[in-house]
Length: 563
Image 1 (tube, rainbow, N blue to C red):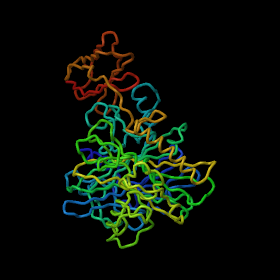
Image 2 (image 1 turned 90 degrees about the vertical axis):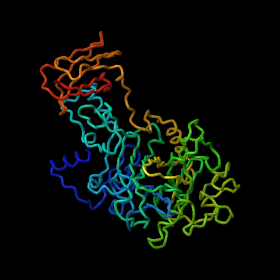
Image 3 (image 1 turned 135 degrees about the vertical axis):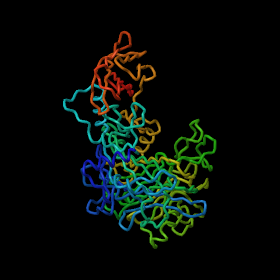
Image 4 (image 1 turned 135 degrees about the horizontal axis):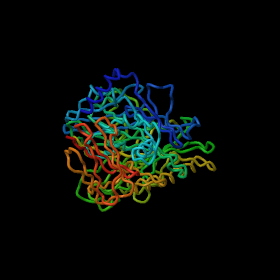
């Protein structure tokens, strides 16, 4: 029904939906980072817009960037042993991901009739929502206020929203429903891997639909939040296949200024991989990709702990917290590579190997290149020196690009979470942060220390679901209501409606709206008795909505019928 509603709206507005030549995009720009996101899930750069260049500018307005391009990778094996994979890099030679939804009928088919509506990135600021709520709750009077398009056009079919009256419909005009976002500014986009052939990797489609929300905080007092961009994904398996040995990863081409003088590394305990200048350029920055929480670990009926066993983790989320089967994987693997060779037919297998820290030919990556010890992490420095998690407990020395005698160059990094099982209909979350650091008094190595301090701060805040400026990582907080203490009768009504509240508060306002969202009556709740009678005798017969607010929040909405 909601899809039909959009179609009807487009018809009356005279809008013709046709396949787009390029993917739409928008940018986060509320803090010290300007980051571009595309409707097909592309991060920062898209081959369709080469003139735009890199879309991860930090400091914002400086013209400098630390990430050229980044993309989501997903791969797993079906019951017949068939590899299914979606992975992109620059969209210069092809695509594996496409904007839009998939049919929710276990087929995972592309929802073609509705796809082009999703060639869009929805952008909204928390301040816009806050103003709307203040106006709706009568704590702010703005003459001639019009509900912003960012709220009215929120894609409530797929995007989260606060459903004030709990009826499942998104109607801001009457009920005060509003977008449910993360951070102080958010971008929302929907994409999938099924609407065309995979011409980037050559992999066979999985049938995943992915809801992405990129967000950032406006918190100048906190340098960590001011220099970080977050992305939350909900990855939905719309296809009929159960995938085993599944990995979800993030590939990045990070360029710290000049592209050809970089080193890469990872920090196992912090669940991060990063790039820094391989030469001591004056005050060169460092840039990380941090896995805050990966997909859910397969259920085993145990509250798993931290360690090096099969069901243990050093950098995951939800381990040893007293709750069973809520564990989310962290950074399970990290590898680096330059541009791979081979035909498109062979790339899917190569990419899947990279997701598991294997070499292109499927052989294991050996620690430091010559130890006879397979590793899950390349260049971990000393971040895995306590547990040697990446080498399954085998003691190994410090390892970095410098100790290997490598020459700085244009590096690509790939971190991944896995393995896990992806069932049909299952939704798996994935939370990452792009954390930037720079030491203006030091050198290239000392900038990595600043970055790691900020990673520690970001991980701590994410774990606590609270920021230093009062925000959360889960959503705009939904308001508590006292709806169970409110009774409205009779319904249907002829002449008088009685509103009874067993816990009346000061200045509670009762308003009546018709189905067009027009206010037809307004009265204050009787604070002495808790009961207020409303004369509806003069109203026409039909459906109305009664709304109660306490001048701070909307606390109750109910449909009534006037006979």
